[in-house]
Structure formats: structure tokens, C-alpha cells
Image (cartoon, rainbow, N blue to C red; front, side):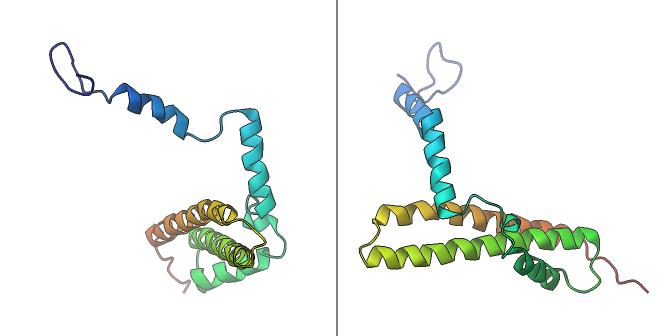
Length: 145
């Protein structure tokens, strides 16, 4: 009768098997597991923010200026900067994925390394999507007279 509302039950509960598996699906819990995940991110170079890389900062600034437009206010420029950061991050992840794919096809890397990159791409894509929504919500600042 687990999982059903019946006599003596006030609410529905999932079966014990489902409840037990939930705890196993939350990522690494031990200190060693968390350290391993952090090393993966550092090895790919994707854990650093885009603006921490001096080579990418000018690219982000130029893209943000193009997105915001001339005469944009501070709020619009800030929203454009978030879009630009996410876009440059997405390009960086995709570039790494392309290089890694070539290495996999050449037999120098196992295909499992390629699957690990997807998480970074999904995160960058999601950040860009929400940044675009926030940018659209910012009212266009009127140009000064």
C-alpha cells in the first residue's frame, strides 16, 4: 500500500525505494568527491569567471557595448554585460568541446571526457537565457535631449 492514500493515511508518499534514491542523486558529498569535481572544472579551465581571464575581458566589454547600444543607462549596460559574459562563456565551452571532440576522434581522449563538458555548456546557456530575459525587462533608457 506504499504510495497510495488509504485508510489511516493523510497524504500520498512515494514508495520507500524512490525516497531512498533521492539522496544518492545530489552530487558528491565527501570532501574527496567534491575535490575531484573541482579538479575537473579547473582542468577544463571552465570554473573561472569569464572576466577573470584578461584575454576575454575586452571581448566581453565590446560585446556588451554592442548589445546595450549607444546612450544606454547603467541598468541597461549592466544587463548587457551579463548577456555578454554568458555568451563569451558559451563560446569558450563550445570551443573546448570542439577541441576535445577532435581528440576523441583521433583516439587520444576517452569519450567520457566529452560528456563532462555538457554540464558547463548547459549552465552557460541557462545563464545567457536568463540574462536576455532580464535585459528585456529593463526599460530602454530615453536618450538625453
